[in-house]
Each structure stands twice: as C-alpha cells, then as structure tokens.
Amino acid sequence: MPNPSRLRAAVLTATALVLSGLLAGCGGGSQEDDEDLTGQKLGWKDCPAPSEAEGGGAAPSPLPDGDEWQCATMRAPLDWDDPEGDTIGLALIRAEASGAADRRIGSLVFNFGGPGGSGVTTLPAFGQDYAKLRTRYDLVSFDPRGVGRSDPVECLDDKQLDTYFQQDATPDDQAERTDLVDSTEKFNAACEKNSKKILPHVRTTDAARDMDLMRQVLGDDKLHYFGISYGTELGGVYAHLFPRQVGRAVFDAVVDPTQTAEQSSLGQAKGFQLALDNFAEDCVSKTEDCPVGDTAEDVKTRIARLLKDLDRKPIPGVFPRELTETAATGGIAQALYSKDFWEYLTEGLEQAYDGDGRVLMVLSDALNGRNEDGEYSNITAANVAINCADDKPRYDPAYVEGKLPEFRDASPLFGDYLAWSMLSCTDWPVAGAADHPDVSAPGAPPILVIGNTGDPATPYEGAGRMVDALGKGVGVELTYKGQGHGAYDSKNRCVQDAVHGYLLDGRVPAAGTVCS
Image (cartoon, rainbow, N blue to C red):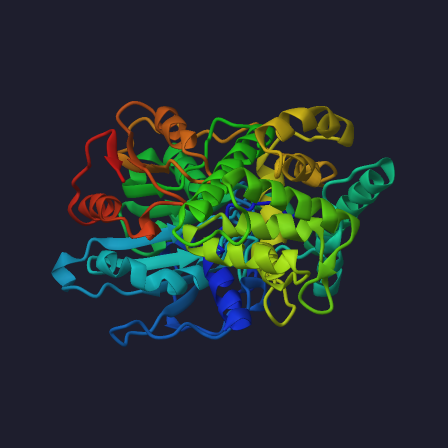
C-alpha cells in the first residue's frame, strides 16, 4: 500500500515541481573472468533526461557556475555471493569540485532515501544546497540497484498503478479486506513476473557493497558520505560491513536501526500525528484566521470528518481520477514532510471542504511517484522490493486487525493507514533478511548523527538509538529542534555550520549539541 512510513524518500522536489505547475542507461552482461571491477573506468558524459523509472522530466540544468552535471554507469556484480557472474549497471551522477585542486578531499556520496529514491535526479534538484560542500568534494549520487536506471524493479504499468492507488487502503468490512489482500497479491505477483532476476539482490547489504566498489572506482581511500532518511540505514550497514573504509560521514533524518517493520510503522504513526498536531497549532496561531479550523482540535476534527466523507463518497481530484480517503490521507502525510508545504496543505484542505480535491491529489501523486503526464517512477516498486528483501517479519490480516487499537491510539488519523500497510510483504517471493539491520561499527571514525525533534517520517528517538547501535566512540548526536523531515535542508545555520565544520575541516561537534 502507498504509505509514508515505508516511503522514506526525498520526494519533496517532485512535490514542489508538480504543485508549481498545478497552482501557478544501463545494461547487464557477464564479467570477463580476468577483469577486476575495481579497475573499471567510468565514462563520464553529459546527463540524459531522466528515464520514466527515474521520474521523467528534463536533463539537469547546468550548475550556477556553468559547469555541467556528468553521468556514468558503473558495473557491479548482480549477486555479490557470485562476484564473477552476471553484472548490472548502476547509474551515477557527479558535479566536480569547484575549489582549488589541492584542497579537494575526494568524492562525497549522497543517498537521499526511500528506499527507492533516484539519487541521479535528486542530487541536481538540491545541488545548490550543497554548494559549500562542493568546494572540496566532487558531489556524487547514484540510483541504487533496482531503482531508476539501475536495473529497475518493475511491477504494474501506469494504468494499473492508477487503479492500485485508488483502492481503499483502510478496509472497514470483510469485503474491503478481501479486496485489499487481493490487490496486494496482484502487485507482488506482477513484481515477481517482471523483475524475478533482480528481486533477490536488492537488499541494503547489496547496496552497501556497491558503495564500497564505487569508492574504489572513484579513486577514494575512504567513503565520505551524506545519508538522509533511509540513506542513514544504508550508511549504518556500510559502516558495519566496512568500518575501516568509513571517512567523514553524516546521517540526517535518522532511521531507527533497532526496530522491526511493525515498530517502525507504529513509531511513524506517532511521528505523523505529532507533525499534524504541530501543523494545526501553527495554523491557528497565525495572526489571520486559520481557514481550516478555529482551534487546533477543530482542525484535526474537520480533517477526520473529511476523510470519513471521502470514504463514503470521493470528490473530483485530478481529472479523471477522484480523491479518495486513501489518496487524501497520503496527500496530507506528504505535506507533513516539510513545513514549507504546510501552506499547500491548508489550501488543499480548504478546497477539499468545497468539493475540489486537486491539491491533495497532487500531493498524493508526489508521494507515489506520479508525474503530470500520468507516468510513474519506480519508487513504489523499488521501495516494496527493498523493504521486503530486508525485513524478515511477514504480517497477515488477522495480525493487523489485532494491532489496530494500538495504531489508532498512536494516531487517530494515520493509525489504520499505517497498520494495514504492513501487509505489503505478506506474499513477497523473496524471504526477508533480518528483523532489523546490524549497524554496529567498532573501529569506525566518528559519524555525525542528526535528529530532528519534529520529524514525522524518522522520529527523533531513532537518532539516539542509531548512536547507541553504532557503538561507543562512533556516533556523535546532534539535535535540531525543528519541523519536517531532516535538518540540513531546513537551512538552519547551526546545523549547517556543524555539518560543514565536520565534512570540510574534520571538526567533530560536541556530542549532545542542540540547534534550534
């Protein structure tokens, strides 16, 4: 099911682009037996327009100084247990360092989250935000295996996805529960039919091994890394597997590595409820009247009533589709990823109360990877594939029903939505690897771990647990008292100074530093 708890993606740029419109190569092959993949040369060239699986759109614009983004394909083993077997191509993008050559540290590799987000499209969209880091690093990102141009997982086609995302993801009776289970089974069967070869090889441990190969191919002795959201889990797994190869690393919007999929979903129900509470308080605290409620409780009551009304009778959305309860819930959740989008949430709610569901549906489309042309990126397919390959637990409908009271207590608005989303891996064709990732990294250098007290998607408590799990002397926690998913891109000066001081000059901030 479409749900924000498992889509820890950097999809804010897609949201902004679609809202502004509304409101204003890689191949496989076999490796030669005597060829060492660490010695391959990357053929950097101007970047093509993003593929449909990456989200479509235009080729990245030049950087502010006129330099062009460059793209290349790196070959990696399809199966890391058989490194001399078939290979896959991983799509990479870079902006070469802008400062003096003798000041260059190396490459700074980004993963923006998901799992399932395309780094090849996200890095250029946020590129200007990292201009200071570019003075001493080549900025590099990539489409992880199964994502975008990197042998993408394919499940349903665009028309089928429209139907899939219109279904009722919060069933109220046995017939609706049966429909939900059937739809999930059909989605998973389509993934197996269309992507059987890649599905066993998209675990986070596989992506971490890809990053170590990438480090060597880029010519770096150490992996300097900036992981956001799911990217923090990937970074933690890398540190566990290759502690001596970790360079300067920052984890922002931190995934709790100690939780099962169920605990993660429950924690995020609480996180999104907190973000909704903060949105409601912010709306009514402004000098002008809040257009979607007189008090914070009134705002939330009216939203709950809207969702119940949509469950009974959807309203027009983006033609020819209707705004359903599920789409509206996803749209609300998507807007809570960033305080910058609270104004769109207010506008979307106000219009929905008047029978116009377009803005909330555009927000929902951004969560699900749908562009204005009706084409979907493969973020949902990749997200399900990676999560199900990683997560060992499997939940059936009876188990979910038993957990509904706990989820509803955590969030009256998002509880059912997130509880039922646990069915996504029930009939997955590949067994999950573990209850939760191992990120213990004895011997690794300091890793800066940043938690945001108002983060809905990766709740703040996860940062402290990541620090503990990394081990003594590795994780260094910094707290940002803010709103939205992540801290660095909030433009908070204290946070950015700490990140720049560490990545650029090697200055580790004091553990327990608080920014507000």
